[in-house]
Image 1 (tube, rainbow, N blue to C red):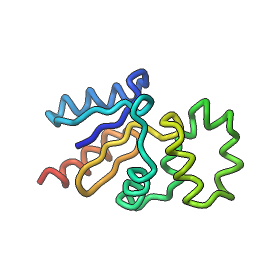
Image 2: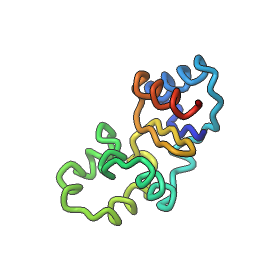
Image 3: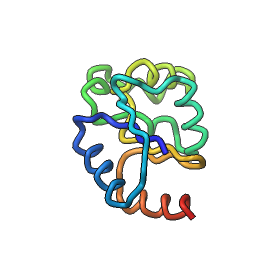
Image 4: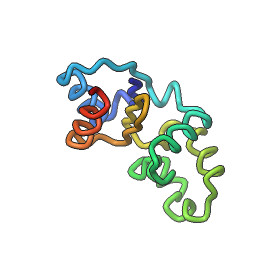
Length: 120
């Protein structure tokens, strides 16, 4: 599994610690220095079944600076993918990517259920 995070993020640290406690091995990738590509984001969006807006880090400084709350509703998926791929700090984190699932943000209960199903 691929774990995409920002090392300075407290939620990412909690998620990584939780994964370690569960004995789950992951490949760690820094979202800032190795940002997701447009192709990866498109694949994960499709795989997740979630609206693309869920991939945005709405609590991030860059999101606020760019006034994306007001701009996103009028943007196409293509434009949103281009924007997400332009800067890893726009992408909600952490991301946990498995063969048949994508988890965005960390909620231990949700991750537990999904990983229990995925690892069976």
